[in-house]
Image (cartoon, one colour):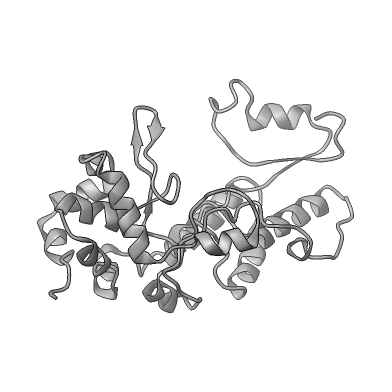
Amino acid sequence: MAEADLTVGMPFERGALGDLVPARIAQAARTYVPIPTIVFPAFHPDIVYIGHKGGLFGSPMGDYHSALIVYGFARGFSVDEIVSLFRADVFARLGYLDGWFAARDSLLAMSRTHGFDLDRLFAGWMRRGCFMHTINHPKLFVLGDLAREALTRAGIPARAATCEDYLPDPLSGSIWPVYPEIAARIGVTGSTTFKPPLGGLNFLVDAGRCIDLRAMVESSLAIYAHTPKIAQHCERVGGWLDNGEIRDALQPLAR
């Protein structure tokens, strides 16, 4: 690090890299610029992680799970019944339609805590629509803006070219859609097409492996069948199951 012109670091807690923490990295670096970790769940509020024995349960989307699918599985709903849960009144009851301002304020406050004002960049990202692939994987233009800002702070000239015109997006392996009802509320383009993380950056392969909502439900249930009590390991879903009012609201549509 001492030989590098610039070291860029995101905040992390002690443990992930032993005794190596951002403060020690900053001390060892010739020039150190901290940048914030971009976590923004407002586009994808249905995503949850499910931990167990120090690891994470998997799903068709890698470590990401749909809380609604897990809930439907725990209730014994059919594929059609679970698909029918993905609708505006359910999203409204769960707060899925109202998370944008809280997510924005949390991200901007966190960035200021680490000495990085994201207000201007954030406004630019929103003008481009959804700027996240998942809750914690920003799109390449976000990473490009952060890198350019870090170079500017270090006094290193940055090229004017936009990196997404020249580089593949390394975080696009998994793409979670912005559900149409949520997208309409935020003002971005919505979809129910999921891109599972099978690796590689071949656009022909990527296009072929995308799945729709029904396939996502079917694939998830096939995995959960081997872990019948998976909902017990998900705090959010457990809370829904214990709340009679929410259970009454989260009912499939009558056929």
